[in-house]
Image 1 (spheres, rainbow over the protein chains, first blue to last red):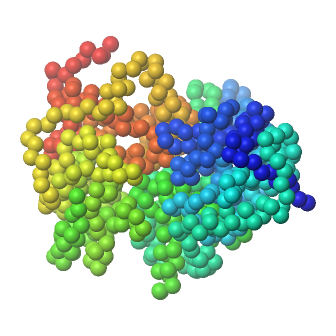
Image 2 (cartoon, helix red, strand yellow; image 1 turned 120 degrees about the vertical axis):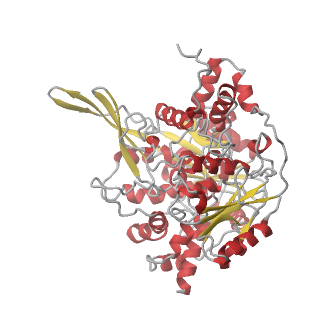
Image 3 (cartoon, chains in turn green, blue; image 1 turned 135 degrees about the horizontal axis):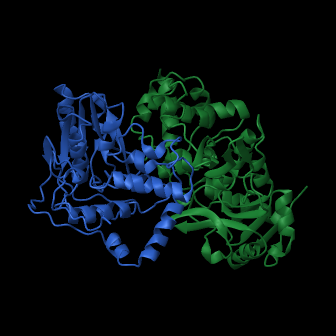
Length: 352
Length: 285
């Protein structure tokens, strides 16, 4: 079935965003200390849906929060009473604006792991109640490489509504899912006019062509993935991880990292159990109760991170876990690039 | 500021004489002028080394890793880096005889926008205070005049409630990745109190109170030790103004603890060891 598409101008797009904010619970990139994070907004002046990709945090925390309460407990003389936490504030009907394509894609990838063995109902609820409006970038940033990976950026269907700044100076708003179509059929599009596929297709194509031509980084994904899967024991991992300071910030800003730890906050007899982010680059990540640590060395942890992104997840779920957004590289205090690491390791393996 | 040639020569000579096992320096990232720290073990890789005003990261951080532990290390240090190295030596974390220090008389490093970094503008000790070999022209200043950080001065002038509100915002935007602590050259504890999952006070949860406890504890552990290299701010993915905590501590300590400035004097045990009967105690209730 075909979904509706609208065309408007710059002012019309702003009015479209404002209409959404007026009628829906909306999240958008809000600047604080020079960095954009997705927060609840009520007016366009508070946020910037066109926030630069290098300065924007991922939307992962809106689905997998940095910290979530798992349960509450009270110790009594009869034992421990465990109770449910308050209602999930992220599970309400909402719209997220200004999402980058790589971020939208990351949810598609994460869906696989959250729909696997254990079904995470909190995640499912948040996903089902959210409409994602994703703007296609006009230009790739220094560390972007989404077009090099295993997914089709041009025809990506990870968002509900696609916004494209056409090369003809017009703004195109296109529904990609039933949910998105429903939102567009309400009066939020009153400042835009419907347009047919025949007109939009060439404009979108030429916009994508100029976007795709702006990438500095390009890799042969198939080759990298294939080689990495065969070179677990290469000493090259030790070389590439040497300058990592194990600060873990890569995992915290990554849109697809989904490891977490459990911690309790206790005051006297009552407490709350929290689920918070963790990182496989942490020295104690694999530390077991008996004191054994299967990944004591940094290069083993780095290998796990690179291989999980580029090999293991692909083997298990058929998708590459890295979406090529470059957030880890931008945030890295010592400028380590995951792109460079996987290319260097696979190239070194070829020489062996 | 460009000491690329000199550093390459020194490193090759050190390898040739068999004096070091690994040389810690900077290399270009391969596409723009930003740099990546590099640990060179093979003398053939010495040509990768560079040093310009983009050599930002404090390399003393690498002295805490397995790559350098119990090895003889060649190391490039700027003024602030050398102060942190001094503290590592004083606190018995590294042995002086194991490190060959290439000191730089630093003219200041630049950020991504090409601007001189704020800590370099405020720098009081630009020349390396510990070195086996010193590159560049020493600034020659004998006496030390304290330069107050403009942000700290501005903050101390606003009412306490507004200041509290400002810091509340800082702690709210902390995502508890602990990158600040890991990238700090002086946070060498193998098991830090702020990144233990089991400790109740500093649990791993990303709540504002946990962030407050973690960042305040961290900054107090670095009071009188922080050398203002800003590794923490470079690592912070939320771009939090962490230097405000450290510079505030620094100014208070300089004023009250016999003009103490971290790591400038070798073997200086730091403010917490400098008990004197003349120390002010009027803040104790």
